[in-house]
Image (tube, rainbow, N blue to C red; front, side, top):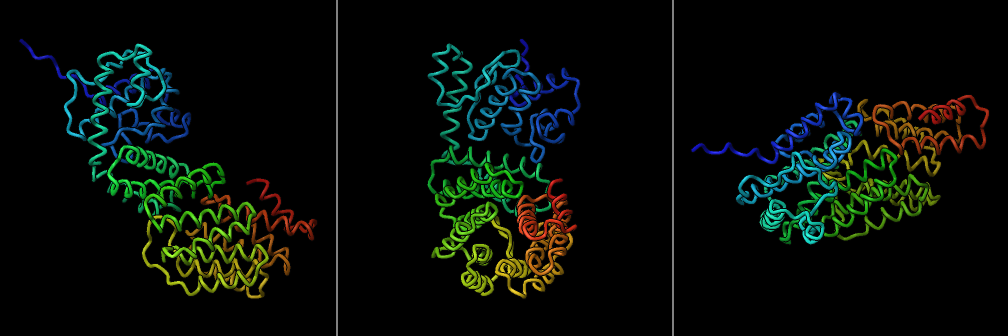
Length: 439
C-alpha cells in the first residue's frame, strides 16, 4: 500500500487559491495594489500567504477582504484565510489538526461574512455545519482557550518593539504606508486583547493596542481625517485607563488638545492639556509637551496670563533624553518652537526673533516642526508686516509638502483669514490664498 500524499497546509491552500485567482485576472501586482489602496509588495506577499514585513505571518484581514472582492473570489479567499488562521492558532497552541486538514474550501463558494467561534448555532440553523466545519469550530474553541492562557511571548515582544519603531520612523514614513502598518499591528493587538483572559497579560496587551490606536489617531490628525483621529483617540484613551499607562494617557490628552486646537476650540484644547498636567500620575516624559500645548491654546484663547504660566511650566519641566513610544520626544528645539508660538499668540514683541531662532535651529529634514515654525513667524508678523506674514505662511506650506500635514494648512489658513480682513488686496495675501486653494 502507498501512503496518501500529505494534504497541503491551510496556508498553502490559501496561497494556491490566491495565485490562481490572481493569474486569471491578468493584472500586475501594482495594478491590483492601486485598486485596493495598498502597495505592490504587500499584495505580492499576500498572494503568497504572507505579510511583507514578516513572512511568518498570514496577510492581515483587511488586505484579504479587499483581494477577495477585487479578484471576484466570492468569499473563497476569506474562508481560506480563516482556515489558515485556525490552523496557525492550533499549531501555536500545540494542538493536533484534524485528519485531512481543516476545511475543504478550494472549490467551494462560501459566505463572505467573517465567522467567529460564537456563530456555531447560526451555522447549524443554516445547515452549513459540515463535519469539517464542526471540527474546525471545535478546534478554534480549544485554540482560543489555550492562547488566552499563554499568548505567544515573541508576538507580544514584536508588537511592543513595533511601537518603538513607529516612534522612530513616524515622520520619515510615507503616510499611506504608515496607515497600513499601523492598522495591521493594531488589528493583531486587538485580536490578542480580545482572546486574553490573564489580568497581567490583559494590561500589557491593552498598553500595546492603545499605543497603536494612539498612532492611528495621530495620523488621522496629521492627514486631516477627523473620524480616524477622534475614533482612535477614544479607543486609545480607554486602553490607557485599562492598562494604567500614564505615558499613553498623557500622549492621548496631548493629541486631544491638538485636535481641539485645530478645530478652533481653544478653551477645550487648553482644558485637555491642563487637566492632564494636574493628574498626580502624569508622566514626566509628556509633561513639558502638555504644558506647551496649554500655553499656545491659552494664548489663542486670549488668556495671556495663563499662557505665560503654562509657558513657565514648560520651561521648568525636565526634558527626557530618550524617545519612547507615544508622544514625540520633547527636546530643546521644541521649547524654542512653542515659545515662539505662544509669544505670537499673545502678540509679544519678542515673538518675531523667537520664531527666527526656532527656524534656524531645526534641521532640514524636520519638515513638520520647520513648517510650524514658519507658521509661528507668520503669526508674529500678521499685525506688523502682513506681506512678510503671508510669505512666511506660504513658506510653511512649501516646507510641509515633503510630509503633508493638515494642521499646517489650518495654521496657514488662519493667518490668511486674519490678513484678508485688513489687507485683501495685498499681493502676498492673494498669493497665499492661491496656495491654500491648491492644497
